Structures are given as structure tokens and as C-alpha cells.
Length: 104
Image 1 (cartoon, one colour):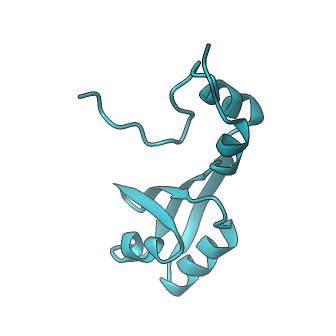
Image 2: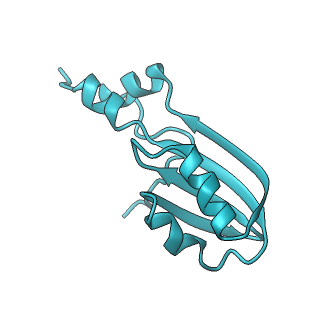
């Protein structure tokens, strides 16, 4: 039997953002940490960002404005209740948008 804490899983539900910007995004990674976010660049102004629970998308918009970046595309999602449940009981390891560490 697999034990899990669904409430803890629900509270840890992060927001996953795919972003495409124009402008000099060299300082974006460091600035993301100031709003409780992590990001990786895919080059060409494309980013994958994870907002921690409690961080709002509005904070990201403000950050992008302060960095003088123009947003060409922004999509975001959170795990569904079904995904949270399946992760909690061990039926799936990660959901779309989550960074998956390479196998060791």
C-alpha cells in the first residue's frame, strides 16, 4: 500500500510557464530568483520557468517589464487534481512542464 499526503501535494502545486521574449534576456535567470522562480533558457528568447507555490503570474509580468523584455508568447499551467493524485499514489513520476533530472 502506498501512503501519500494529498494536501501536501496540492499545496506544492507549482505553476509551469513557457515564455518567449524579445530583447536582451541575459539577466532574466538571476532576476527570476528574486520572485521565487527558476528558469532555463532554450535560446532565442525561449524560456521554461517554474513559479513556486504562492508566486503569482503577475509577479512575472512585472519582472519582464522591469527587464525591458517584450513578451511574444506566454503559456502557463498547473497540475490538475488528477495529476496531483496520480503523483501522490506513485502512478506517475512527473507531469508535463516539470523538469525531469536525467537518469543516473
